[in-house]
Length: 153
Length: 153
DNA sequence: GCCAATCGGACCGAACTGGTCCGATTTGAG
DNA sequence: CTCAAATCGGACCAGTTCGGTCCGATTGGC
Ligand code: SF4
Ligand code: SF4
Figure 1 (spheres, chains in turn orange, green, cyan, purple):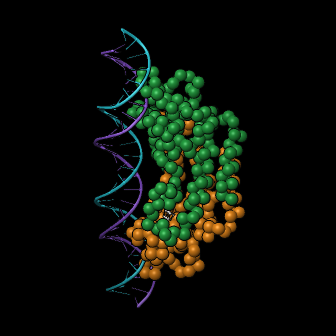
Figure 2: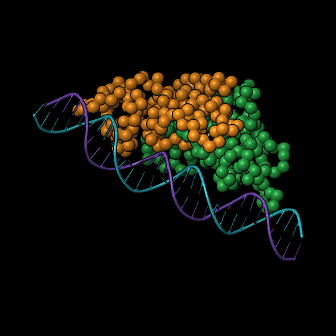
Figure 3: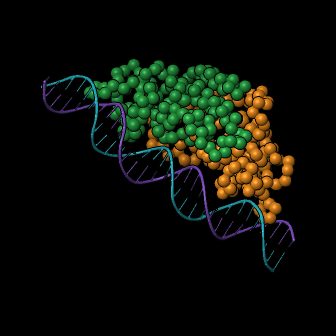
């Protein structure tokens, strides 16, 4: 129940990118020294985030990366899924590979889908714009998490 | 963002234990062949759950384990914490070991505590009694998850 | 046409997880 | 009282994934 360091660093880097969104194109080096993430790790993260479609990348001299969407349209769930694959608490929730030995007669399996959507909803209710803002501001914007209750009903 | 197989198996085993709660003491062997979990793994899980206080264990012939609390008082968060340690999405949330290199000037750190409590609340709102019930029954009992909204406000 | 800067993917070592095993301890029977 | 069976408890080891590092491919500028 602990997300990988890569995902954490990705959130930090994207938050920094969201702050300096209006400025010119960012590159992995600048992002690394701005956040403190080791440069090679930042490069790998830029690659993954670009492949996932969260960053628009341009190669060559003067190239770099840019947020492909406004910060308010990027959620924590998007970032985590981009870095460490689909969010699936158990293997049977992941539709691709359902290779659990107990798959046949497991009584708990039907419930996991609901719980999985609950935590996914909690993560999807946090936008990148909120993470980039100061912690003490805009508390009432947290309302979308009420959607979690709907999922479980 | 995927919980370990041990935690998953622990949930399956405790669900099975909750179903046959009124009967006599259960042992690891019976629980294993009832759920399909490999016997050595079931033994290890029984040990951890007992150490965490979720199961009352009795050694010797005719011994076994028993739920220490009613199924409605055991939540998913309890089980996961018992098996794979405290729920902390990032290392800085875990108060014990705050050994992150970016700890000093990380702008995202204050937000993680809120998000962490949100997902923890989502997991704590699912009781073992609900997992043991059939998936189509008692849907309105999902209301406690509304507490997640309170945490974020 | 050449060069420099940047992304992209391949490679390797370390840590953790998951699985297996055997010993410590207690009860019940004889 | 002694023995033996049964059970929990913790130590041990292989497999896999994660995190970090490196170099090559590609593009734009001069
Ligand atoms: S089928 Fe049951 S044991 Fe297997 S992954 Fe799903 S919930 Fe877990
Ligand atoms: S201090 Fe920042 S980078 Fe470090 S664990 Fe916390 S959120 Fe992640």
